[in-house]
Image 1 (cartoon, rainbow, N blue to C red):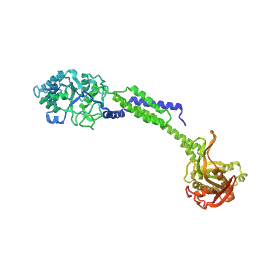
Image 2: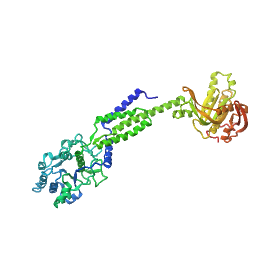
Image 3: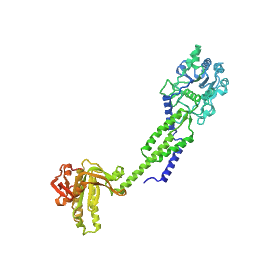
Length: 596
């Protein structure tokens, strides 16, 4: 029933192909994304990485909109004042993650555009200002009023667009998968390049960097400027990168892997400007998180498919249990080094191999046990067969001491009645008789040891332990006589002389185990108890009782069902034995467990 080496190799190649294709096609990306989010959370919690010169976020929040009543498109004076405040503060770089006007508002109020232009001109000698550009409904870059670009510089226009993963979470800045970023570098990328960031600008945002972000209200900055509080402006912004963006509760929000806004510590849905801030952090540190090259992942997925081989046991099970822990630990460590090692596909490949082999081996074992049960059910007792199938019966030669009740039975005068019959008729009669007697033994958890001509030996209490093996043996003897009565009725109809039997019972300690040679042995009971039971069966004819048992058996069943004390009787090869005779008062069909 074992799996051949050829078939095992073929199934392994099939599993390997499935695992490699699954890894290459990225079927586990959703699971990997969730694992990645959790890893970022763990790194932020247990291994925080502070930023020395962190980005400062200025938020256009609710209180700002309440104080400044004009429509946002007409905020030219306020934005100009903010830029002049930044000119006093002298940041290292300024990114404006807001939508700037597409055209002039001169028609509305002469010189209305000048305030914003003057603010940009005030910042020009201090630090570069990067203007964010979005796209329209057709995916084309939205126009910015050209004078603003002229003052800021045509190279200082960047994309504010963000592309979401399939589950709606923003994790990456990758032009290869996000068309708007292919048209123009991101705002964070432009700012980082100005500050000398040399890291990879494509890949996953590193959400493990830096502390939670708290923003400075846009309105506060305007008030500091109105008070000419240069000291406050300088202490807050001097030589620091600054990002301006909207921080309203329900507008321009994105879901990211971790809660990033300090004011909302449990909410991963944050203002979009915070994603740009975190991307900037990544770029000025070690760059975006790079995925492990696909060929490595495919090779690893192929290697873990080797879980297909080897015997399933505690060693392989322990290795498979530790494997995800080790792989997860390695993935977490690499993420801290700026490398994303997706493990879901590899774990899936290993699980597929391990579970497939476990399932196949289990199927083969069940089939093998069924084969053994079908093939040997007629050769050994059900109790022994069950122990063999379950692997609990030792195959070593030798035995152990155990208390049992031994039963011997024999057909009276069988030799003389067989003389006038053909061998075929004798065998047929014996088979019919033994079928009934064997069933009676099995019905009461007995083990048929052997057939000896027209006799049989059985014992109760091994390999299945019983509370009172003597009671089981007595019940079996009663059922044997009941079945014999029914069999004789059938024989009488066929004109065959009825059968009479004698049954001897004795209980005590015997040696139970395998006896014979290494190549041919049997499971049997040996000891004086066995020999005495055989001699007791021989007394049944002289004592005129169908059942004769020893005093130990009678005592164990509390002398039930009219056991008759027959006193001491000599038996061949043994000292006198105190015996009891039993002639069942009725011969109905006795159910298992009636005697007490």
